[in-house]
Image (cartoon, rainbow, N blue to C red; front, side):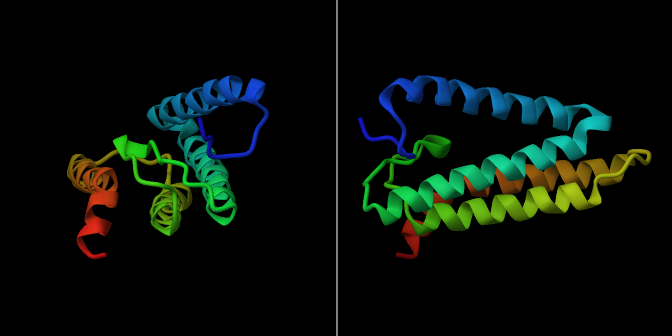
Length: 132
């Protein structure tokens, strides 16, 4: 089985567990007001690690399937672009996260934008294929 990042076979399982744990920590931190900035910073770090692994696999000419969002297409430039978009969103969140009161209208707009953005990211590979 081809893996995204070069790692000894014995490290693949623990790395997978660490990735899932990091993703869970990001979600938990983003859900807790005082830890929101930590969550965005962790997301940036994890996206950076994913992007390095994608570029590494692509430059080694490894046809590793991307399992992101249920996709099975081989990793490539489109995945770097997608991670760049997600990193820009995480950076915007990091820079704008504040401790002020939550306004219902703003929360509604943020929820709608998040849902639309999430759907676009989930279908990103399919959207790119439409224009290739």
